[in-house]
Image 1 (cartoon, rainbow, N blue to C red):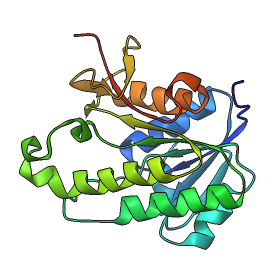
Image 2 (image 1 turned 90 degrees about the vertical axis):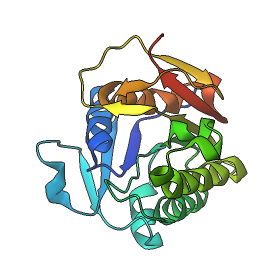
Image 3 (image 1 turned 60 degrees about the vertical axis):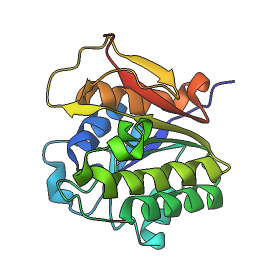
Image 4 (image 1 turned 120 degrees about the horizontal axis):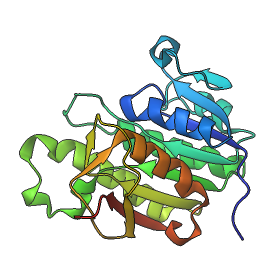
Length: 204
């Protein structure tokens, strides 16, 4: 039976994909909480609730997760490619809080570089890819109902809509950020993808 989702929180809501994801969740009819470091970066996007905080602060994360039905994680480092554990540590805090508050569903945006052999990943992206790998391991080890979405290159272009999703298999080389946002929202209730990492893209 499909999960009943009415209220969702988006972590990383003020990022490029995050903003599109908040809008996609609102469009779906969800009551949306945006978790951000800086409220001003939401611009014209108007979720019903905003929590200003740091994903590394467990109290901030708890405040955002209580009373939610679903969680969407779109954490990123913007253009900073230096070694980090912020995304994986933040994901672990989110998963811990979900367990505490009995929130079951989570969809998480990672990277299609995880489909690649590590030595083939472009050198500058290896540190970020390693943290994405730690995020995926945290999901695999948790007892929540998770989906990891592994987008290829995220493009600043309008939604196409004719995308495909395949469990444990890369699909395409590019995805519109708007299609990615819709996928992240829809994956919360996509039973066939629960417990899988998912390749996305357009038919070649």
